[in-house]
Every structure is written in C-alpha cells, then in structure tokens.
Image 1 (cartoon, rainbow, N blue to C red):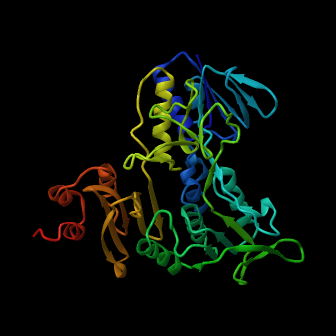
Image 2 (cartoon, one colour):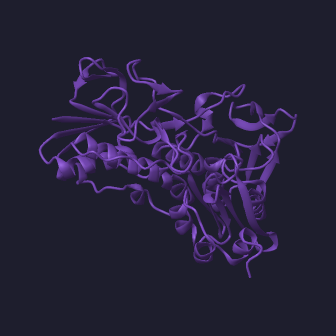
Image 3 (cartoon, rainbow, N blue to C red):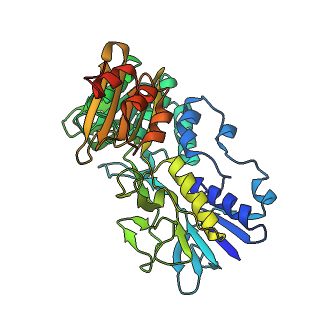
Amino acid sequence: MVYLIIGNSAAGIFAADAIRKYDRQGEIVILSTEEENAYSRCLTTYYVSGQIEKSGMFIRPDQYYAARNINFRGGVRVTGIQVAENQVELEDGSTLGYDKLLIASGAGAARAPIAGAGEEEIHVMRTLADADKILAALKSGRKRVAVLGGGLVSLKTAGALAEHGVPVTIIVTSRHILSQQFDKPGADLIMNRLARNGVRFVMGASAAELLHDRDGACSGLRLDTGEIVDCDLVFMGKGVTPNSDFIPPEIEMRGKFVKVDKSMVTTVPNIYAAGDVAMSYDKVSGRPAAYAIWPNAAEQGAIAGANMAGRQLQYGGAVSMNSLHFFGLNAICGGDSRGKGPGSIEECVYWPTRSLYQKCVFAEGRLTGFILVGKTANAGVLMAHLGLRLNFEKCLDILDRGLVAAVFPNTE
C-alpha cells in the first residue's frame, strides 16, 4: 500500500502518524514545496519577535521521518492529479503513483495588488521563509513598518515587530480591527493595548500606491484617503487562500476548498483531504465551514490518516477558535463569537478600565460562542461546552459570576 500525502504541516504530519499507527508496513511518501522538516506556522510571529529560537519552530525531531520509515521529499510541487491512473503530476514533469492520497496542501497568504509594488516588496507571514525575509529586512536597517489589514495575522505580526521597538502603522479598511473574530468592544481593548505600546492605527483606509525614493527603495504608502504613511517595509495580512490550483474536476470543490465528508473523503473514494484546503462543517451549526487553524487541521489529518489505513472514524466538526497575546493582554474567542447565527442572544460583562470583557453567545439554550479579553482562564472549558445546553448550575461552574447574573437575571 502506497500512501501519498501532499503537505508537510499539521494535517499531513498527523495523518502520517495515524497511518503508521495502524499500518507499520505501508509506504508513506510526503511531498512539500518547502525544504524544511515539519514546523509550526503558529509560531512564526514568536520567532520574529525573538521569543523563540528558530530551532523551537520544529514540531518533529530530525530523525522523525527515518524513524517512521517515511519518505519525505521537500522542494516538490504538485501540479495535477491523474485520478484514473492514481498518479500525481509534479512540476518537473514526472509522475508519482499512490493507492491512497491525502490532499493536505494547506493555504497560502492572500495578496492584493498595490500600484507601484513588486511582489518582493510586499511581505507576508505564512512560512518560515517569510519570517526569515522579515528578519533579514529588519537587520538590513528597515525600521518603519506599514501593516495592511486588521486581522489576526496582521496584528500578530505587528505585535512581533513592536516587540523589536520598530515603529508600526496598521492600516485597516473596516470600522474596527479583528472584525471577523471579535466584536467592537473586545477588539477596542486589544487595539488600545497595542496603541499604548507604540502601534499607530489608521482606520477606514487602504493602500493605493507604494512610493519609492531616488534609489528605488520603498519610502512610503499613499492611502486612498490621500494620506502618506512613511515606511520602508510593507507587510500585508489579508487572510489565506487554499492551495488547490492542482485539483482536477473529478474532485468536487466548494469554491477553492476541497469538499469532504465526515470521514475526510472527497468525491473520489481513495482521495482524502484535510486541513486548510478542506471544507468540512461547523461542529455547532452543522453548516459547511473551513477554519484555517492548527487544532482543526491536526484533528482532521489524524482522522484522515486513520481512515486511509482502514479505520472508520468520523470527524466531529470544526470549531472556530483564535487566541492573542499582546503586551500582557490575553484574548480568546471561539465558536460564533460575533453572534451572527440565527436566534443568537448575547450576554456580556464589560469593564474597559480594567481591560476586561467577557461575552457568551447563546442560541436555543445552547452555548454557541464566546469572547474573553483580559481574563481567559476558563476558555478551554467554554470550548468544551460549545453546542451544549447550559442550565443555571452548569453556568455557575463555567461562567464568570457577572455573566451568570446576566444570563439568569432573576436568580439570586
């Protein structure tokens, strides 16, 4: 049996571990566009900030592949899949056969064009190589940074650069930062903490043109408002796009995502998909969903790998969860944190002078989402209870007392 895995990050590595657990003899081949051993993309900003060394990025030891008899081939790009022939096409024109295939190709950093900017002039943060490029730019003397976007990647990168003492300006098109994960009260607490530590924000604007000095080096950004932001390094954090350009028409897609069932199988029986490239479903709502976060990718990969090796496991559904830490302020959100689901009711405790915000979202008596800023100790418990009905006694166990009083106002 030949198991072929496209991708060497969370989904691919956890799939390989599961395959080897149930099949000690089968051939496992992992293909990756990157040369490095498996590492955690979640830690790239910690690496840039200097909180961890490069060696701390790697999630498996150097001997991992040999010890598990895994053929790892780095620097290899898949350009197509020949479904009928059970083969993948590689960039060099060669093909590679398989009995079972896992698509765990992940996602790449999304880019938006900016007038006057070459691709190499706009930095992103998705890979270890991206992080190294930013560090090299800082070491070369670039000390004024403009960050485009107010999402998770942008803020985490801005925070990492601010840890270096680098002046950072964040340019955000929406009305508040983290608009896809946090509501405005929670987001404002995070924004205020960053601002107090030297990060400047420009809201309601976007980049119109990259400016250069006489030597052709980046000197600033002209915004669509006419304002010019002085900078010599530009970072773009506009989310991610699934790496799915090589997927053939025999495999059903949902947009750019590969559609899978609860066994992580695609519409081709011996082809599976997991991680940021896969469209599964939300654990709480049951609707199709894709959340590009590490825990979901790891769990999906483990289930896909086990099923490729003959198990019959089912995925319980993806959960949205994001955590942040800036200059001593912790923040976590999970599930339908913005209360966008039908019939949602929100209850919150807001204490801005203490940088404290706690919100729970309920629908039909079930906990469907939450936001915690400042006090996050019970986030794990809340995650475990997403989708469950909560009575008064259970709320006393897992919610802040202020939230309990808000949820059950008539209970003494």
